[in-house]
Length: 442
Length: 147
Image (cartoon, rainbow over all chains, first blue to last red; front, side, top):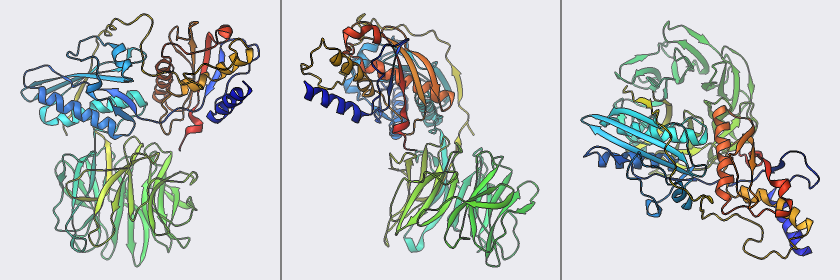
């Protein structure tokens, strides 16, 4: 018996569980649970009901994409329909919670699809199976048949948000540089796609090298660096019309690495002149320029904090490439990176709590995150070449470029959860680099 | 840019399918130290009962699904029947950290954990029922944080 007690106590200690003392108590017994499990939440998603004749295929496509969005986060696991005890044949059908509990479905998503001509109507409901109640109200989405993917993304965003408490990111787009051809003759075009790599559209031809596209806060415009004049220049591209406007610079100046301010009215970027590179700000409406740094070193890759009050950037003023934070109006910057290696391409999280960066150390490249004061640095990836992080609109996921080694090496887009889990390649038709994740679409 | 119109359905809650009044069947057995074996402990002893009670959090923990970077700590109030089943609504007593939506999600996760792991009832010591008939359970993910 003593042996059993000791084993039990050791197990409890290892599990890190705290129990209330065994003395007399007033009020409820208080216990603390500190160790749970980190595993995908199992959900059931019966194929949405087709409410009109001929909408079966659309219902199946939408159901599959909702499930794919959720499982793609690494936070959810779809239960195979083969395991279902209940069959959901009607959206109005009462939920047989006992049957869903029996297969350990923690969430149940039901839906219905109606197609009338070009109009598409999608309804869904989300249930917390073990508490036997609906999570939030049912929702109906109305759109066009061509926009079915967006409708599915919106359903998935709602489910994700209701279960995790965070905004979703599925109905968002990414602008990036599409790459084709061998390494020594690579052709680059600006392209825009859904967050999951679908619906790729090209915004420029491959006549000139293009780099570093950056979405505006509303996702209606894109900043990018173009070499069509032979020198790097910054263009502003209207996504709807593909119309372009160049930010004015003087002869001999090179402008690159642009990024929008939070209001979308101003742009910060690097300007190289006479061998020195500093950070500048330009008002797009007035064309007024303001110099924000003035140092003999290279200052580049600026990124605003979400509240617009600070800028993080990279500089070699210490002798190696490191990260610095300064006021959005300029002034003395403070260094925030102190680890081994070189740090670059910092991007402030939309939640404001973290800065993502590229790190090069001991011949390897990493995507990492740190607190805005430089503390709690964590490396999320490691490879021959990882670079250029961009945040999902909810600050949960980072997309970046991974390039493989050798003459046949190619660039591709990858994403990773901010916890370092769920590393995935984003399916694009060509190679891809320099992603910029846009906002959640209205 | 094409907009998708969203309309909230003001529908009455769907009726619950006739459920077994004894509670849901579950394929998740509570996880106990020594599960499936006759305990060599003398069930009548205070010490054994205390240890059984102290092991309760581990049974719930097995079903507590924590998000990798969850920072919200919630405390919920639960009442139990003598056979170790949840007796009533699980109520939120307090929540710290995160946004309101984060706190709602953390409460939902805590409630799911308690309900999903109860199976046919938690094997709590009957001799101490007066102590555990009502529990304030705090779910604290801080030790599991990765950021």
